[in-house]
Image (cartoon, rainbow, N blue to C red; front, top):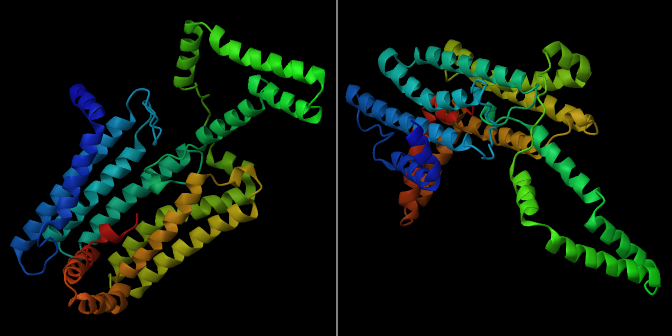
Length: 375
């Protein structure tokens, strides 16, 4: 296993390119979502496609985890060796859920598959709630697949500000420049300026090699971050007050929304408007609550969004477009628009062929909850 890890880390660009190529080819395989075949043979073929896709996704996830946990590597997920990899578990579960859906439909039928989807969504809810608690009740990034470690970016910004305001050659130089600018022909100012330039040049030359090597090692080495205790729920609510409670409510609504939708579809059916409208309402209310808190208390450091959190809110709003692809809205509205677009583009050479393939993939993917779940 260690040999495989070393090989992946040494050839990460090649591995990433190979994974992207094989993943793309699975979508271009003919008759992936075609209805030309019916019966158990078509179901077995679709099951094989789902199995291949899931295996490729799991391999990709494991390889990315190996690269991100490499020594002296800047980890986007900030994986701690001693902690349980909740984020990795969520990603692996998302790679497996399509296979679970296809297998459940193949062996238990369309109606019973929603019970299995409810189980997978319930597991994801538990994992995300654990990540939410572990992160100190911060906003989940990409559904918990990326850890929201805002303290690192804040520390970098504070260090840059401290360096820019720290007395040193550059700070002295700027002070001298200002002083010289006020009295350009002052003898004292010209003397101090010349002494400063001599000091800057002499500093780069006189530093011994071992000192520059030590400084370089200190720049490369990651600073030891102090271990902070994760606050309990009662501590968080007592410290943040009503804004903290509202923010946490919005985040929990975002986490529970997929499970609520699946349970309602399991009870009322996918063609009912009740699950669709309820899910949309939960999304809108949860997002509105978070936007309300972060806008009204934007001056508070506790609710000031980082760039990653702002991008996460934009990503969640973009996922609302998936409601156009979910039944019953898709059957009653979106499907007619796609058919009209296909008929309009069909006479155009090449464009008509490509549009037909794209629409075929969209219509086929729409039949899978896991492709349109947004969870």
